[in-house]
View 1 (cartoon, rainbow, N blue to C red):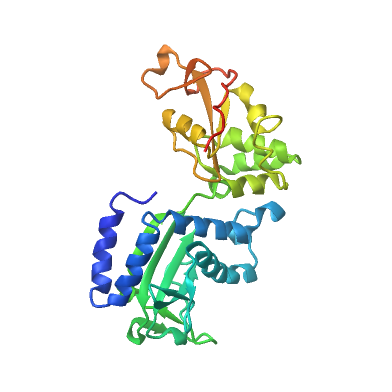
View 2: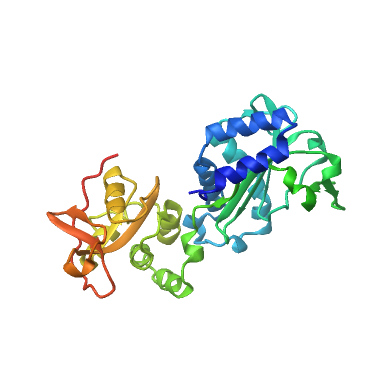
Length: 320
């Protein structure tokens, strides 16, 4: 999920930002041990943005459609959801105690826009940024010192980090991949087709038909279906799996058996709460060395544009 050179870049930045601050190092090391890949952190940010959008009730998928009050609430939700995920102890002066050190949490949707309160002076801040349009996020640690801050004229006297002192931030994860908001980034014409139907089931069918070979999160499914039983709408027995099977489309979920099929077809496996759809074809000579999977006694490959639709095979029994 993170860039290949990410660890090296982080190590260099960490050394520059914190070699003389053992508390910063201690908090950094604690968080990296708790989440070595950053996947847990990224999932919290993805879920928090989706929580604000509340797609099941509103059909929204775009940050710009949030009310100002909802955007203002984002920082509080990030703080709460990170604490729930990592079970941080409440701080006395700041939000958390991490590695027995007081840490405040500040989120901004704009990189560098963290608003630091005067009472955080001298403390460590966990600075978090996520941008749904860029599908990127960062989290780093910063020791709040007056000389490294901009003193703005806002009413509550909050401060920001001077651009020239952002190198003082000890990055935990920097410019890493945020799980993609599929609806936000899909072709507008395709998105219009998805939302054209009044039927939640038909909208889901179009989603899995048009968005293939990409991870589709549960919140995307919830937003498109806008129904309480949205998961039922994906499965067979009348759901998208059975509706799209005649078109040769497989919809794999996060079951281990489905993940193995995805990998054998050369696709990214769905993670927890995700789906991935793909049109398949029986392996023929013209498919050459394409990755293939054995299902229903035949070998299958990802279909090429010239391959005609055919009934897709059955997916393996669900196992975890």
